[in-house]
Length: 339
Image 1 (cartoon, rainbow, N blue to C red):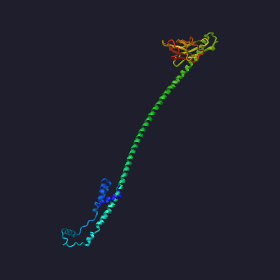
Image 2 (cartoon, one colour):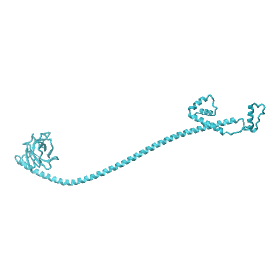
Image 3 (cartoon, one colour):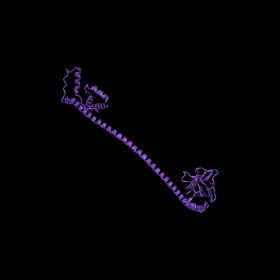
């Protein structure tokens, strides 16, 4: 901003009446201050235009001849120039001072007007910059909103597509489950008939086992059932790894430390395998071996056996598949197990 002192110096500089002692300092400031240069340029333009706006007047007819006579030295011989009242009125003595004052007033008015216009131009420039900045921000915000809208639209389309795929997969899953349930229902109906058949077979086996127990009791020493309290009877049934049609009964006489095993439908094994009978007694950490059991397809096959250690309470009986000749402890699969 230009202060009041600089504005006064600029006005005087444009009129050519700036004091000589202030002229160097003002011209130095003028060379480096762009705003001061613009102000002086405006004031010079106003001064030049002022000359064209003043009224023009013609000199009196005898004034030019009188001036030439005085220049040529004929002023003493020539008569004095007498101006009429009209000539005196056209060239009044105070006219230059009035013009100078008017010009000074006009310069001041132009200066203040230009200063106001410059201030308004600066304010408008600032406002224009602010508007441009707001416009840039609005464009950026609009671009961000459009980007977000595009992303949301893309995400929405992806969500809809994924939902459709999940729905289609669930429909397919439900259809598969329906088919599986229908298949299971048919199998259940078939299994129900098979279960009833298996129950009837088991019941027949139990009846046969009861008869075998009665026969075995008669075969024991005494044959009259007097030692029934010392006997442990177990009915052997096939496990999940055993033959489905096999069955058996095992009786252990703890007083005489010997027992009888009755088997039926026990299939043959490869040449390097044998069936082995085991008795479980809570006194031992593992089962006690009762020897090798030969395979047989006959009904009512009877085998007498003894254990390698004393068994006072035979809690359960088991038959496993072991390597040829038997093992000290069970290592193979258990194919038959008592209750």
